[in-house]
Image (cartoon, rainbow, N blue to C red; front, side, top):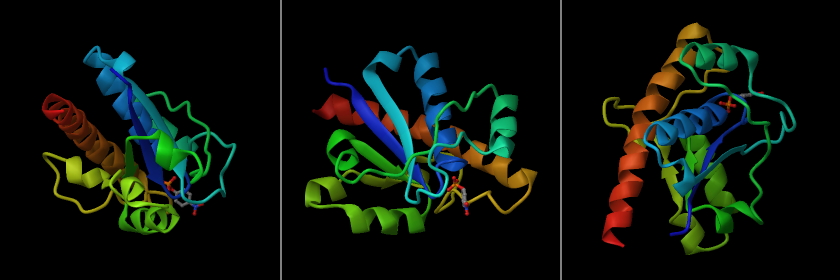
Length: 162
Ligand code: 4NP
């Protein structure tokens, strides 16, 4: 079976999407299915390209056992929409920006909102924590832990009906 390839996308690729990448990798590792997936993250903006995750996000993530190792990069519309099976936006502005980059309907069908996979939390976006305080970073991780669990279940269900 081909690997399921998932790309998480936020604005800067230094707070929310690298955290989503680490949380998802943690969940699939715990479930023993790491080999079935390829997980990556990217930003709609290139402002922080080449930088590691925001140190504040790293501190909060580490407290829950996640090591944020990814380096920021912008979405590559020439590669990412063909390569990945799921392209998952953190907020509605990310989704609008991604929709501007797609070239066809099959690309469009790969776009999802992170919060649509949540089971416990009822949010329409993962709020941008960049200009806020500690509680914003904790909320990002709460939402991602919930939604990544839901995403794994959704992918598993999808594969059953194929
Ligand atoms: P992210 O957060 O999209 O979750 O990585 C942000 C990172 C940087 C900026 C805004 C949001 N910025 O304005 O530089």
